[in-house]
Image (cartoon, rainbow, N blue to C red; front, side, top):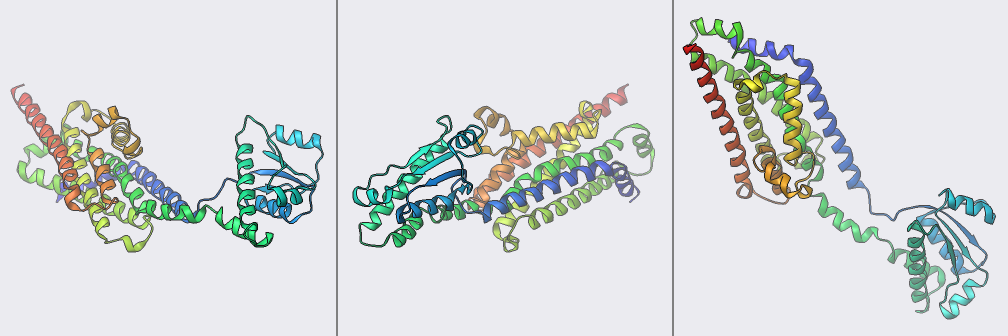
Length: 384
């Protein structure tokens, strides 16, 4: 029990680093929550720009067109002369100057021809897109009026038919597919790895070198019991960090009904496997002299950021290059991210068990390498 308490006393000395990385992780999880929340609540809309409309024709068609443009863009209300218009276009205060000439409505009703002028900076494609909006609106409006409906009714139907939000909203719902929960869980490896390195690595390392190691070796405590207490303390700390991060990710993950669902349990199991693998890797770091001589903060940043960038934590696997993927597939983060993607694409345990197995394989390799190096180092010291 004394070793168990000593383990957490050492962690307490490094509490600032632990809390710092914990705060970073919590902050990013909350940021992801806001981003995904905004994406869920927004409907698809057309881009809105500042324009100026000069309506010289007091006809129903002209008023309907001006009202439609005003529903999409922001129309300047003040009266401008040609010089002012050119200056505003030059300084991009407005992107388009639209002039509806006198007699437009009468001619359009008879022939369907439009003499509307649209002045814009040809270096910017925005003005051309507004011209296309005008043409689409007028063509649709004329189609409805030719069916015998009034201009007012035709304008309402035209606006409804050109509304893209109802066409894109279905795609938006499909894309959500646990978006906030997925985003929170896919970021967890950074928090798990950096916090455990900042807390566990100095504690495990302190029992493996110096006077503390020598005192433990000459004490009456057996080697197996010593290792058992250190393992129990490390497991307790890892379990605490795992539980706190999973609870935080779940609360930031959106709909509470998703908690305790099949996807949630698979995600929690995936995070648990990754936590175990990280603990095994820290054991290797504490026994290999190259890593043992490193500062916890430096090791946390280099290893944590490197694994996360190569493994799909910060950058989605779908946009990583083939070369990066070939390197990343040897890291546990890659298979953690792959498992999360499969889970939220509708996968079951049968679809992701190999991701768990490959993560554990990496952890076991690290554990065996660490134990082997520790034994070789001990034998060399005995010979010396």
